[in-house]
Length: 127
Image (cartoon, rainbow, N blue to C red; front, side, top):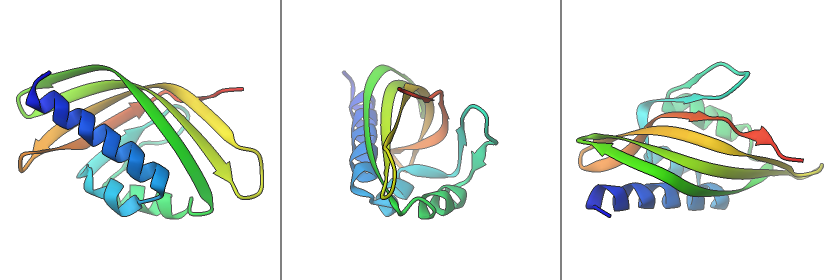
């Protein structure tokens, strides 16, 4: 495994750990200013600020996320990673909702560090 692949694995591990800890500020540092998130049945969420606003609206929930990397490919300062992701959202009042499925993320290297540039996920509710 080369240096870039190791760095990408650290990025994903850091993202999941920060998400599970509710550390939105750390998560924001792991993405490009012009990040875009794509998902089924909803419009694209564009920009770091939009992500921060969306996260602020979820403060009443706790999340548990885990992922298993299926593939990493690096092309110079660009890369993609396919991950099988599971996220459980636990509201204070209500039953947890578990979603799972594949994600495909495009990363780019900025100032020598990998950051998330585009993310498409196909997470579906698991019953």
